[in-house]
Length: 466
Image 1 (tube, rainbow, N blue to C red):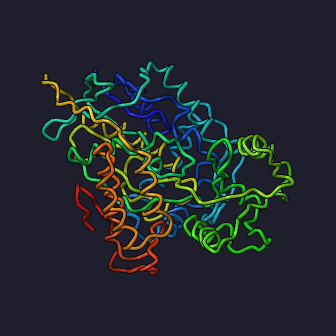
Image 2 (cartoon, rainbow, N blue to C red):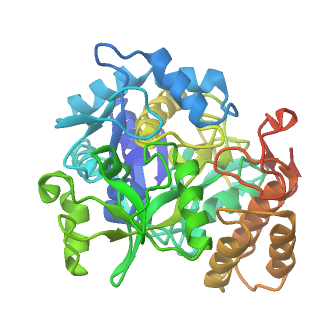
Image 3 (tube, rainbow, N blue to C red):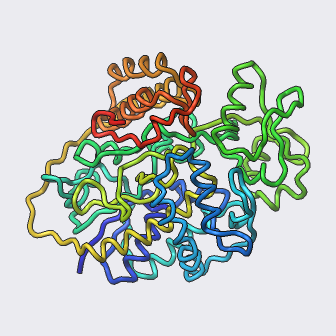
């Protein structure tokens, strides 16, 4: 029986696990648990263009407009055209959606939600179904990929070699490599850096989406979902002045808030007009009340935070990487679906579809390993990750320039940290420096307009190629 190792226990990894187990593969999921995944924390919903009056074409156009025309159009059509399959798959495992909503950048109410904690319900149910299908679960973090001569043979888990016929990276993006993020701090992109170092190039690393409405509270950093603005909440300054269309795409709203903050003004989300906030947004209500805020009465202080990384390990339409027998899905990979800026609620859609599609790919590829001598284990130490987070936040944040990016590259040399994380950070800085334009989530104050000559993806294999 062909063995498949999946790194990551979020929606993408668990979907792949269920789909592969249904095909008779011997599947092992390695991760820290569903609660440590960004999928579990996803508040909003999943975009499905399946209702009367909507269409896949409308969803494709919204996705490309949000992505500022850097999207790979074939990939966008490939993903969106499978949305009904993803919807039916979720129904088949017992998921029941409660409502559909509108979010920024969408021309139709196609975002299907469950109590504004959709990710939690999706991942819990996927985990349950995977266990019922006999998927093995190993708790822990993967140290590194076991790669030899351009071929993957498994992983090292706490120094121990675990051998698999094929590997699927579903370990998420690298928003945890920035100082402020509402996602899991463990999502540093370690395996993205590891894959680059071992021969699988990355794509579009400069595109990091900052969610406009982060809440920096006493008990941690949290996300105030875009659906709150979709329900009627308004963004205001401390003077009560509205300054942006709240349903614009995230890059526009995040920069508008950032400019107000640079001018010395505090920014708030006014959700007092929303009836029964607690019922609609129980997760958000809970952390606000914990900090003594009542959203029916109080303004919510907000700030942009690193949220989603469009870049990742470069894959083809079938989620193959540049390393044989190694696949990547979900936020860990990049195939041009999101372009320069992710459209709201397209991420969980991509997780489900990439999980289903990679199972088909592996079934076609039929990867099998013969006997192999154990690949080299390097045993890197993580080192000073907090300094990397500080560096990227300060030098490759919401607004960038050649000056800040070059300063970041110089400072990077002096940080003692895992070389794979430093390689990934360098990829972000170098590709942001090479892209002399502003497009989507990448904003250069020294090149504030889009430039047609840069309407192409970047690739990073140790050097930025744009």
